[in-house]
Length: 305
Image 1 (cartoon, rainbow, N blue to C red):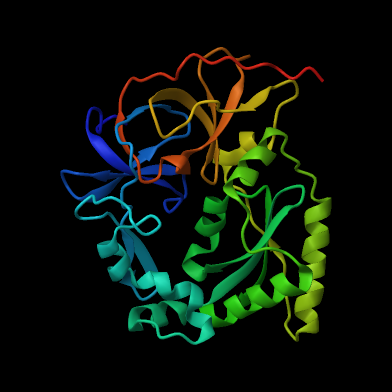
Image 2 (cartoon, rainbow, N blue to C red):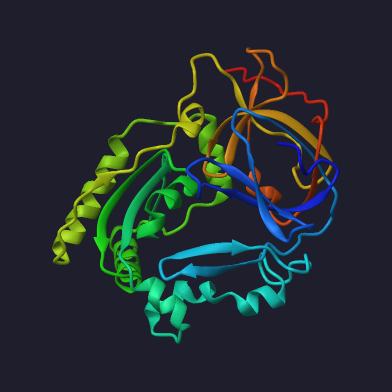
């Protein structure tokens, strides 16, 4: 767990590629990505940088899979999450506009030629999106998004077709293709597990696809066990947004649950202690050192009504 203790590593955020949430850290000694289990563990770290560093790029491991590569130089990020060098070599960056007829590399063409899924994801009241996932990423894509409810609507023959469907459905039903990270965090203060609204949107989406000549087959996504306590709040349990900025200082907490990139933590082992919610992707691109660190003293005014 603490084999990075004392060593500054660039945080690459949370991945669900293994089926469980892990924090990715770029190992400066091996130039590889290490994975740190988080749920059920105490996570302590100190942020050692004031700037954001490049989080590398994706390369094609084979025809149907991509894998992350850390920045070989641990350079500062200058273009989104990347440095200029990694951005120039990132073939996967063309994926989002491939359906518009732009030139794309041969490796990406092969990747996009495989089946893709169209899905609808609900994060909370009024927070819903339509999205896509390549067949090998059918489960991990939604696990990384971390919705409360999600439904696969239809399997498309390739990545071009599914993106056209995504844009058409988004325009017809006035459903966005993204949900803000701050919204995903806020709705978990009082998670709403009622399926009524989600089912209504699924029915509308299925009807629209049928009108377009498709045969939708809605299938529910199965939420991972690691996110259970974030999706379902216990009676009397008080939650609050973690009050300290993650990109500076020292932090330490026990992680009880993870949904997408958001985690539910306790600062003390007291079973009645307030649970805090925070987004670990805030650390993406920051240099951190793992260790027996603790969070600053916290005062939280409980709700009066």
